[in-house]
Length: 188
Image 1 (cartoon, rainbow, N blue to C red):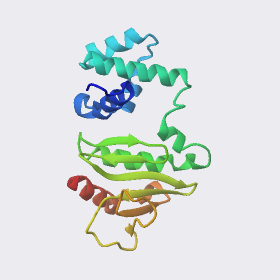
Image 2 (cartoon, rainbow, N blue to C red):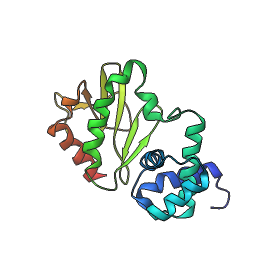
Image 3 (cartoon, helix red, strand yellow):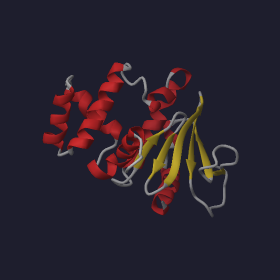
């Protein structure tokens, strides 16, 4: 990795956390939050001894936990930022989606961005975006599938997905939607 910046190396490690440790950065940060530890060394020790994490990953997770704590709880968490203010009422839709999507397999990766959460496996198969105060849009990669009433062509919504489904309630997270997402996941 000669010439790779420390930031790029950290990003790569974060991206590889689910594959190498079985959990995403957010999941590890929640584990540390529940542990109630304050010192970096204590966090590293916990992650290594109780969770079998290598020193490099444990050190990175502990640093990220302390960064977030110093910036204010969750202040730099893109998901928390997406569901604040007028969009706070949409969070149950997001949580219902994540619960179903994470059940697809251990290789589901949630990659939060500023405006949306990318759903990845070997490649992106979808995304979740709170688009308005009343609606969450789910982008799905289903190339070759004809759009229908509910499964719209993505159009100008997002070029990284082929289709979009609009959700206004957790009840919209139904078998039909999960079926489309599962199909995209299987193809990723």
